[in-house]
Image (cartoon, rainbow, N blue to C red; front, side, top):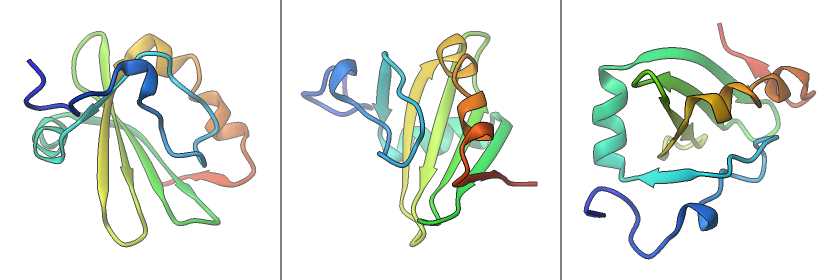
Length: 105
């Protein structure tokens, strides 16, 4: 049932913003309503800020095998994406290595 996701998009066509230094092969876009509800009860694993654009990327632990990525623009728009925890964990080091991303404290 796709009532809480983005209709007409396959996981292969869903992408993180171009500033994010990695891709996730099986990414599902969540509606704002669902994403914000899910992360309100989730544990924040880490958050980074893109220094040139002001975007933030937050990683939330939502189940044993799933994370939600929250992307916020400088004006406060949020998008949420569900992904396999193993897929994101394998690529999170790219944020630490990227010159234009810094970890929020």
